[in-house]
Image (cartoon, rainbow, N blue to C red):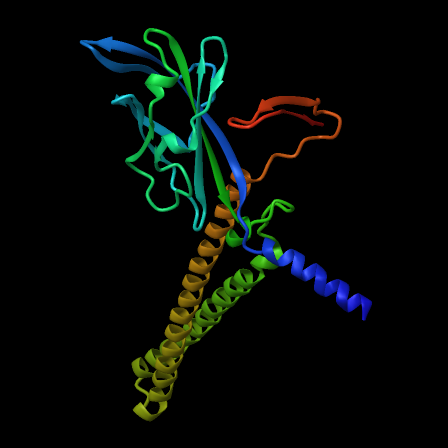
Amino acid sequence: MRVFLFGLALCSLLRPLQGQHFPLLEETLRIQFEVIDEGGQAVAGWSNISPEAPMVSSISVHNLSFIDAGLFITFSLEKTEKEFYYQINLSIQDEDGALAYPAAWSIKGEHQHIKKEFDGLELLWANALEEILDFNRPYTLLLTTRLFGDLAQLGVSCEKRPAFTYREQLPNYLGLATGLGLIGIGQVFKANADEDYQQYLTRWQDGNSTDEARPYLEAARSKDNTYKILAITGIAVLSVDAVGYGFRFFKYKKRVRQYEKYCPKDEAPGNKSPAWRLSARPGGAGVKIVARF
């Protein structure tokens, strides 16, 4: 009874985790910009990703401008897998390295749970020009994209790299053997049909009666029909087998790409140095220190 109650309690604890989405990828795009005064209007003079920053594939910024006092961003995102979604956080870093984060009320547009539309997205940081930015000073805009999802929905597990084993390919090998076997047997019938037809021609040319020659002709026709049936069936089996193999191989390669994209690379023990990270939560008190070994 105790074991049953323990199992029941464990299932109730694990049930909320079923179907839960977890952060799979996190990338930060850095854009350098400066607020310029052009005829009394604030203009964002911005450049692409800084040379030392890695290229970010999940997000592309198309324009940076100001609407009233707000920083307006138009961007697009890489299309996600089924039921996956993006969350976007942004901050601004000044030339001294100080970071400014937007208040929750000041962020307008698509930045939470993005899963359907990925092109022509818009984001507004209201009052950024009044509260944070000054004219003719360099800043860096940091756009951090987090991708959430459940790999189990894709049939991928980070615990084991996808494989296309010989055992999984056995049905394809059996299909290949069956198709080739049917074609091979058909060739035997074809050879026998040719022999019977030659026997028919020989007897007909020698002046034998029709009753003596016709059985060879009928046998040749019957065996030739059997050859055609076996050949067509064998080719059909090979075609279906090839299509099935191609479909399964395509799914396998897709799972490998998903595994390599979403699962962290293994690192040899002892080769990873400790990493320290100091961060402060915007809008909250306290400092957090994280050590990773």
